[in-house]
Image (cartoon, rainbow, N blue to C red; front, side, top):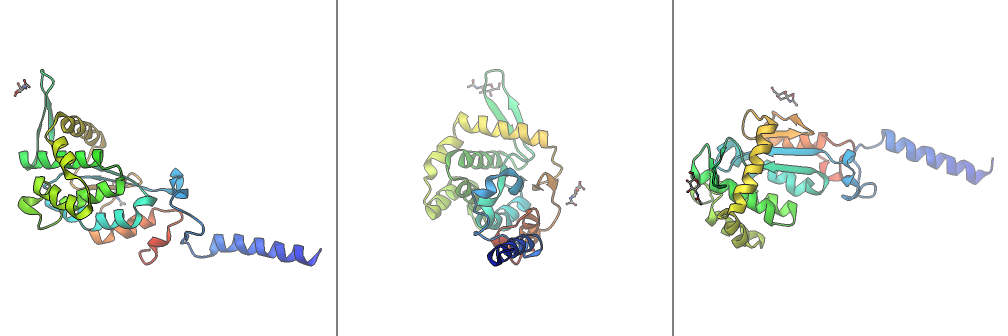
Length: 225
Ligand SMILES: *[C@@H]1O[C@H](CO)[C@@H](O)[C@H](O)[C@H]1NC(C)=O
Ligand SMILES: *[C@@H]1O[C@H](CO)[C@@H](O)[C@H](O)[C@H]1NC(C)=O
């Protein structure tokens, strides 16, 4: 066998070996965010919540927001701001809601639904909603004032989102989230599912749980698993 052929074969074996037994973290050299678009590489995370539930605020504005910031482009992220609401379809075509924490929560849920509908960049939309859930936002957050504050912080036009929340559009969006929530058969809030398996951990373990769902975790998972 020619010398260079032998070197070539050993290189190939080395590459195969390092991919099989080497570090389990991929780097951008191997996987770009676009390559994670292939479904088999992109874990899904689903979060069911409502705007005024304290545990939802605690998770969405902190550990979940960190996951969105750090791993957003590598995940299929679905959030549903309906929670334990009920939808009333009136004969005249109007849609009304009853929410666990009253009308303030229904309006907040509508702001969340409208942000997801209005903000073209999904990661930004999710972070906008996380921002409205932060501790210290006025009157429990997820209201017009919070939308204005988060819009200013993130350079997002909150006027379109607020107008949507006051229009029939928001009722249509929220009632669709209601249908999806009922179908998901959730038991508590927030409900977090990673690759459709219920996640029962505490917030500080969310990043590790999400990272563990990758076949080939991106470099951002270094230190978490
Ligand atoms: C539609 O019907 C509901 C329930 O009867 C009522 O409260 C609401 O005002 C009506 N809306 C319109 C636009 O007529
Ligand atoms: C979390 O709890 C639910 C219900 O008790 C269970 O079905 C699910 O498998 C649990 N998830 C994990 C990751 O253990």
